Image 1 (cartoon, rainbow, N blue to C red):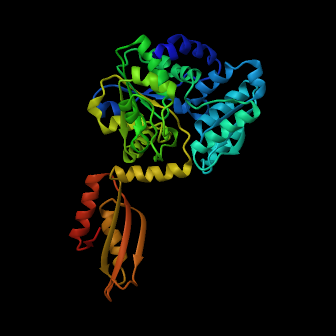
Image 2 (cartoon, helix red, strand yellow):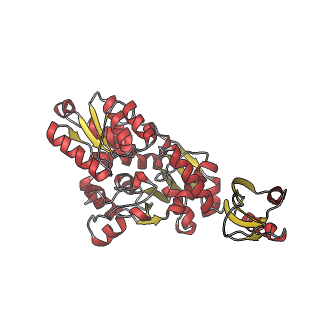
Length: 403
């Protein structure tokens, strides 16, 4: 069934089409993840692809396959970021006019990049489904060709070229771990890898708040998850595509889910340990390894699907990731309100090697006694053990730690 939808021949044809367009992205070894999992772990860096994600591959193959008449009519797409940029650049390279509908609130850097690649950007409602509806209406009204983000054989074949590169760069691979939204990337990789190495295990990963594949696989057909919620906007998709679903159902060995805390911790790890800027969706494969290291036979290849992260989101996610890893400590305590009391508290924290990120000092509150003051602290620490040491140092100095 899957071979009738997209075949290895289709993926190889897509690879030839992309030969002068897409970058053969690096496969980087991770000593830290290898130690955590107990087997070699490599990172397939699609965050370093042109436009910052794998999406250029499928978009270019799809648009390159249009007839001259279809190209003359232009193309239209809907996306909150990565697919938008992939379509915009692909269309520009092929001399095709492109229009992209983006939901309100799409990250401004992604909107600016999409325009920079040559697309006309239009508002597309509050959520992606509304943007998709606007794009389809535009296609019907103008004759432009609608370029779906994942639900088309050409899109899947283009994304499948990642799988061919993985086999060329790591012939001994035993497990490939891939983030999953609509399913185009994992389906394409599965087609390529399983055709050449049927023994390789393919594992998809979804954010728990936007996990449409587990119930769909259980039902035997795509089902919709209402109001998917996750920081990983690249995989925040409420319903699998019909084409990728059938391939995933047949060829993908397992689809796992990860929490928001696990996504944040994975993003932080990629930045600190691998020195790679990765968006939350791109870090989902790493999150799965961190959540259950013993579940993956090696060598393992984790696909980092994209690196287009809004700086403001990155700031929030990093704080969240550090908190999830025990690297932030928030405390509230009371002390005697006298000259030098705050300086004495800070001296205790300094001796404990805790870095003060933020401090709030309250003296006038009906909850406080006449000679009391309350201090709320946000500290940066080295981890959970250090947090416990800081608490102990404060108690030993006579402070009442309230939270």
